[in-house]
Image (cartoon, rainbow over the protein chains, first blue to last red):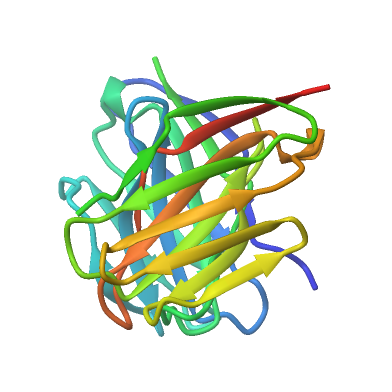
Length: 114
Length: 110
């Protein structure tokens, strides 16, 4: 069974640009969550999508947005990039997103802002 | 609502034991444990639901103390492969989001 796939693996952008990251969950998984990981803050929850609807949202500014498609694939968009957005962005999928189900993480997209 | 993990870092020799704690100030519904090696994705270890159950996974086990709102991860007879950063993730409802602790960096030396 293929794991969670995130593309691209690495991205370099400049301040003010926007970026779109992609996540393909494990086949059959309908919940996709996104996290930002930085050395100082650890894993910070961005949002969770289930059946194309945003079900949970973290405390990030509106510049961070996402969506989920009917095949459960998800994209995350960050507009007007800032230096502080440099981080590893991880997505995780689970079957239904319920608390007794594990989340399976992708390898992440490392975003560097110059 | 971010759980507090302790200790922040642990250094062990192969064969030694370690305990990592994860505490919450709010009533927990479940606790998830993950391990992340440098440059890799976090890997799921186990989930504990409220009820105080204990789970095991080879020489790694965990407990959930509902009274204290705390979970502990036990690594016995540690191996070199146990090195990595351990994260606990806490949930406060059945369809809640996971709040992750800042991680505990475990280093096992031969």
